[in-house]
Length: 388
Image (cartoon, rainbow, N blue to C red; front, side, top):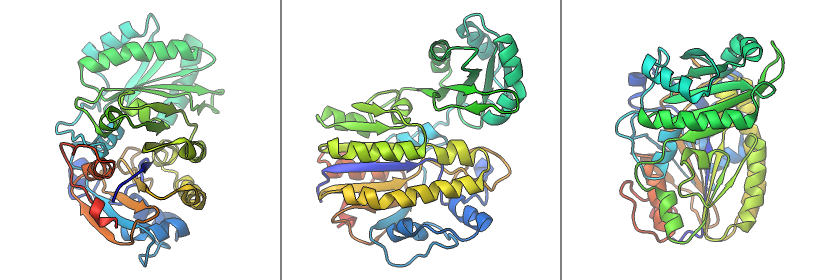
């Protein structure tokens, strides 16, 4: 089988349980899709069901009958359960040593370096926290003093929040760019600018967030595609995740609905190559906030959109719906969860058959490299011949 256009739709945080090492990450029993269905009642996702979603885990309301695509799950081979690690692995790069995290806040050395990067502004917070919770807690102080809110999470990340009416976006971005140099020295995965608006008690984060990521230490699928003279179009935070490397065109999105719209608009313009899409709301708005109702609503939006997308596909197109990690909204915490992720492959010519449990997310990247007639990636096993 030869792939003309590959489309990866990353439903950020939509795991399907079953990770053999979940307990080592404190995530025993995590199953984003299965637990969600038990929390909100049977899920009505007819289009995802037809693609095989019900074969990935036990989902109330979603059957495991005949499908119109190939289906399976993928196990993460990398150490970690963060956004960068998951995306890099599906592009062929395994992270053997987990990126550092800071459950007690940043130590004095890094804190001093971040103060210097802040350009004279103070820092408050410096702890692990939910982004929405710490903004409600420290937002009034930030507005009154002009200090930056500094926090982290279970991921390898420096997050810097500021009210857009107090610190202009350009200044916040410049501070985060300087903080990225600090992060590079300490191998920290991401720096995230977290602007917000509103008044005390009514703060709201905006889609003006910006991610500054560690540069992939090795070439990825994206690099291979671009080196072959083919385009890679990133929708959402894809370009940020890969530090811009291997991305021909980046389309900024403001949430899932906007990202799905941009995907439909970009598809007719794409020649042979890759369309790589991140749907961030499952993770940012719903998983991290334990919002089961919102999470289900997001899945319904994706399900309702699928017929229009499938109608726009043409011969030689293969689309993959997957995830970068879990973010079970039913668990007590608000962090990512170590889970397997769905693997749904569909398009004209793709047969209905099981793909099994893949040993690594790298199998996805290797399959796309195989279908685009590229040199094999260093890691992963292609399942291209199982699609026809």
